Structure formats: structure tokens, C-alpha cells
Length: 88
Image 1 (cartoon, one colour):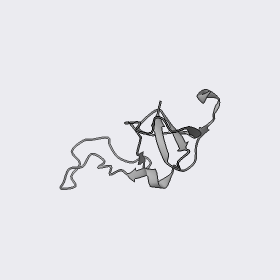
Image 2 (tube, rainbow, N blue to C red; image 1 turned 45 degrees about the vertical axis):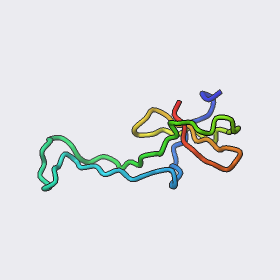
Image 3 (tube, helix red, strand yellow; image 1 turned 30 degrees about the vertical axis):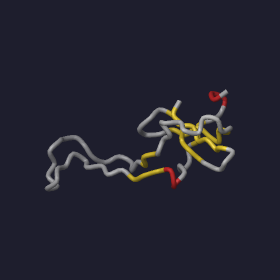
Image 4 (cartoon, helix red, strand yellow; image 1 turned 60 degrees about the horizontal axis):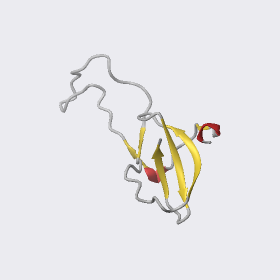
């Protein structure tokens, strides 16, 4: 079962992530336009396989990760060598 796997608290797979640009409530001039925004941790956006093109290839769940944008993601390792994030 997926619920039996503990949630991974470490660093995500680097080649499956993108950096996010947080504006902290500032516009293109750098002026604060929205109050009470800013600070917080830097977040990495994970590239998630939403199309699920690899349907007939067997895969194994390597770990479950907590994502700052989504509740949880599963890191799947396919038998052909692909590694993808999967939302469930």
C-alpha cells in the first residue's frame, strides 16, 4: 500500500525540479504592491507526469515526497530507466 511508505523529507531529485521565482509582492519596478508578503523558504517546483504516457511499463515506487505546491507526490522508477513524479 502507498500509505505504508513513510514520507521522504530530504532533497528532491534535482533533474526533475525547476526553480521558482517568488516576487514577494513586488512589481516590475521593485515596489511593494501587496502588503504582508515575503520571506519564507525557497521552494523547488517538481515536474510531474500528468499525461502518464508510460502506462504499460512496470514501475516501482521509490518514495513518497511532500511537495510545497501539491499534497504528496510519488517518485516512480520505471523498468526502462525513466524516473518521474506521479501525483495521486
